[in-house]
Length: 461
Ligand code: PMP
Image (cartoon, rainbow, N blue to C red; front, side, top):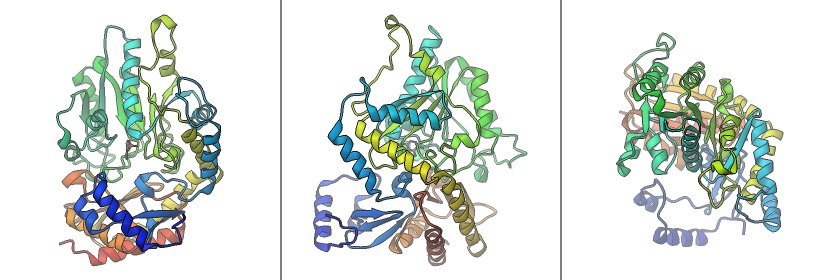
């Protein structure tokens, strides 16, 4: 049954009733779902289709993840072939697609890495924490380094430990208390500098703040520093170019591992295969997910530098294996699909395309600043973009959450799906965009034109 071009109101209504009666959805108010539902039954390129035939331009690529765009039928062939050949076996043994995928990832990282497979971005970061802790136990017997330094307003996943690592108080509050093993420092967000300073005269106060935290905690208690190269969830914050290299220097100075979260940033999104490659750093641990398979099937991974891998390569008597297993880790079908996904990213030069079309979309969005005073800032890298809405450009007072919701709903009702930041009252006022990397210039024009109309219509007072 293909509903892409075959609207079917009867099926749609049946699904809505079935869903409302039986499903508990993530991060949506069920009352809002009752008022307005999208029943997705087909998708092509950057467009998704409701069962009633309505088309939506998906400027978020699902949840920042469908990098190669929707509707690539060849991936169905790859999955079917692998299902017939070998549907599953645990990754305690080897399998053909997972070995090929790990080799590909190592190549994309520039060599010198091994890959541990999991199923989601949260698990990839969580395995990163555990690998860092184990590494430190191996390297410093009797002197245990276990803390992770991460940033306020970051997001690293849904598990308790990744939530603990994240720095969004309003998002975390429902699940308190936390372990205290995660120490938070100021985030690099130049439009809203936590120190009220301006770049470059700030002297990178955010890096100094991190060093203070390392010294205050005692470097001998810190296992790793965790950063997303370009913060996404807070409304897309691109740090100064020196930020990540300076963080890496701190890590080297104090013998701390650098753990980079490329869950959103990776696989071409920011104009390079991985965002840390803009900054010429060599992280010790890298969490990848989403774009690895463009979400055609669930798969994610924790990629570790060979110096970390080596610490797990002891004599049998030393018992140095990674102390956990994920049932579906290294799943052959997901891995086969991920390999083909990466081949498509490379063959179609989608990272370069993200840089090019991303600049075009950002330029288009910047033209809105002339017409709409409410647009305080347009920022991003490649096709990872934030448009911050403020009541006043000087005070930068955020617009109300209700008006952001109204912009959202206007866009949705006019066939455009956009995202929004989740940093609470101080940071919840940014529209986010992370479209498929195949988005066309004409589709970018539609985004700008629809947002233009939304900004003219919504009351921001
Ligand atoms: N890290 C970042 C930066 C993310 O944005 C997300 C999810 N959006 C995660 C980790 C967690 O990934 P997942 O939802 O696949 O567990």
